Length: 286
Image (cartoon, rainbow, N blue to C red; front, side, top):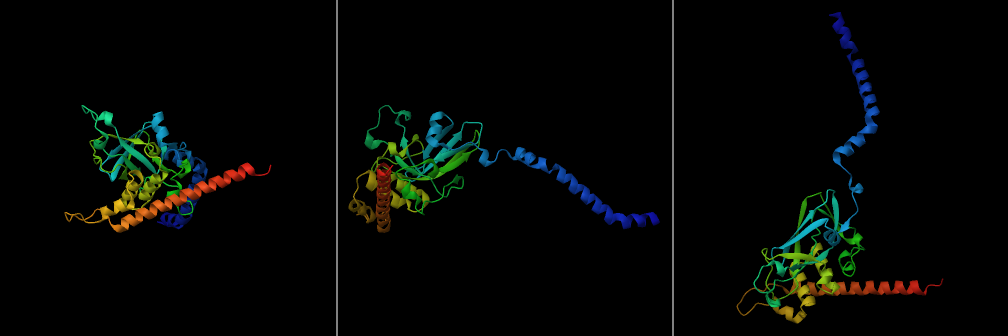
């Protein structure tokens, strides 16, 4: 009985001694713990290889990309990483989706008026898998219309040998042609291969960022790409003779006009600034 009492009295000191011993053991092992954690978690994002442009990756065979239009307003982008390493793909904020007529297996080629519409596709800024750069003075969309350096593109990291997908908004770039359908094969192209007007890229960028509604962006695209005047587009905002509700509203038409004007002014300022910088560089005293 007396031995049990002595052991009970020494229990607190025994617990403190065991605690100090455990702390010493952890301190000895601590230098190796980060290495063990890194081995389990894999390389950190900073250790991953640098970003590669989407079209460069497609041409080099690093990725395989497909675009499937649901209609003229929505597409699904699928990108497969064909490498055995995580790949950060830099996506442009706007690109084109064009029909691949050679793969439709038709007996005769379709006339241009019967070919499916080409599309201007915008990145959805709300997509959680994308990492975006910081805004430039709060106005990032118009500034990227003329030039798209890598630092201003969205980054999308895809796991090795995996397929990532995004649901993206789009606009029709050929009024009057048949609407896209999933059964029609499409391919991804640079937007400048389809249009020479940089304002179209700005409209798509504003659509993807949520600064412009889909209908307003569509009106702006028809104005820029199909030569429709604002007065002609205004007829789409009025009820028809069949008393069918109009697809567009006067407010959406006004928003399209403001967006086009804003982007044009931004491009003009950017061109003026580049010209001034070039002149100052070439005429500066040496």
